[in-house]
Length: 159
Image (cartoon, rainbow, N blue to C red):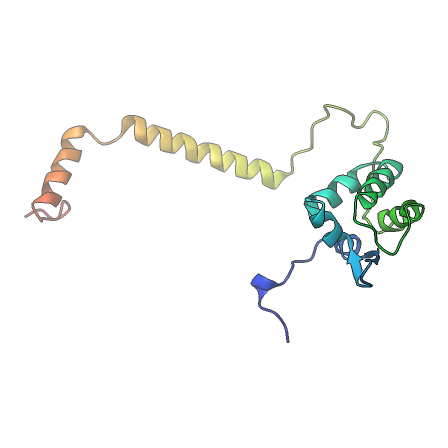
């Protein structure tokens, strides 16, 4: 039986990592990364994105630290580093070091043509709205329309 869409999770590039088992809990049930992070009051998808952006060694250390904060499972504290290494290997890797001269701190993202077009359209729409509000309909006409409406007549066709 397929669940309706409000009850299903959309695909995420982090699914392989988030739904991977950390190990077995003390009761013998598997513990996934998503469950473990939620138990630690950490948003799993935000944490996965944060770990992906870190260099591999820092991400491994951060995840190792999180696993150590969990209640004891059927793994020892000496195993947490190996578990973290395995799990970090499931994250999508992004280019961490930018080629020299290309980007660095404070570098601007390149705007795509479609984004520029939408910005221009939004700016023109805002300017049109401002001009309409600034120059708007004369007050006498607004009051006449309001009076017509309150008298039960149409402001467009008259009495």
